[in-house]
Length: 453
Image 1 (tube, rainbow, N blue to C red):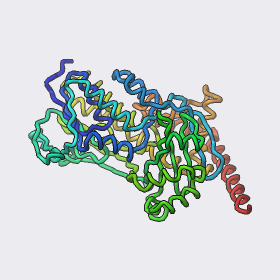
Image 2 (cartoon, rainbow, N blue to C red):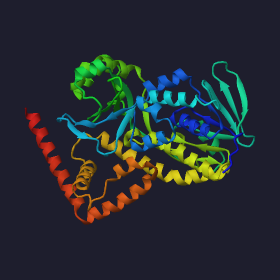
Image 3 (cartoon, one colour):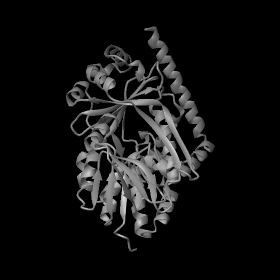
């Protein structure tokens, strides 16, 4: 279908979703202007100190290949081979990648820088950093922006506006004004800070290469991902309360006692951990369900601006990529019928991102559990085992299907729900309950014996 190549598309937000969409739109010949309120250096710095490593599976690889940028992205990735988890203070448990799909981790700052550089290769793409969105006029189709360095304001006419400005999206606020809006923004009762382990410290701690590590305690959890330079980036997660939260870790001495109690194997890294805990900002796990995602033929939301969820299901970046690819596909189909493009995009995507949000909340709960006797965790393991041993009878778990095809998450979840109803009829739910009870009894006996000694 013929496209109006003289259309200028304005993207607010130079994060992963905004930069990736800029590449796709530039390939179609559109003029793309990206506004980002932070400086380019601050954007990278914030992504390093506040963020967490991103994970994705084979679907994201296929998207990057389709977009023609896989060769640029691949050098930034680490392909993981498995994970090692320690629940409470029990011996750690090793396992291979549970999904069976290739799993990669990447530092947000590295992939973001690469995506921006790839976008800047197109002469029809322009980035304006240190530029804030101040106001938006839907009737006149203009935005008021401010150069944060010079403090000067400017009114800019826009053909299309894309909100790619994250969970606290300004575009979403302006767009949903005077519309029938449904918006839920939930905050988990756990927070996080990023801590880092240098290559030298990693060697001293005996971490295996290309392996994800997790430690879960009653009032703390730590999740560490490998980096290309042999260092590890980790999320230290604590409850949001004054007794066990980050407020309680106000000095190096207190932090040393905390690490000795919760993560004694990591005591050699105490100086670096204390530095990061005291210096790095706290982050929150936010879940967003919102609609609408668009306003007529003028505005649309992508990425975290449209759907925010915690990272524990490993599909956050893939969801942003899928948004962009869906828009690209619909532009190919409907051309400059923008309201049709945006309405169909929301209809096709929202149910699946809502399902991912639900799964991410449940997976966060599993990450911060401090007992092996967890019904949900045991059920997942039993289900995976049955699928491996008797694949003709027991279908592939939903997590594996979603890893390969996150764009249809809601469909996979619906199918999985039906499967579990059948499992209940077959008595598997009862089996899982008995197994959970036995595991719990063993844990309690072991704990009692340990306390006597």
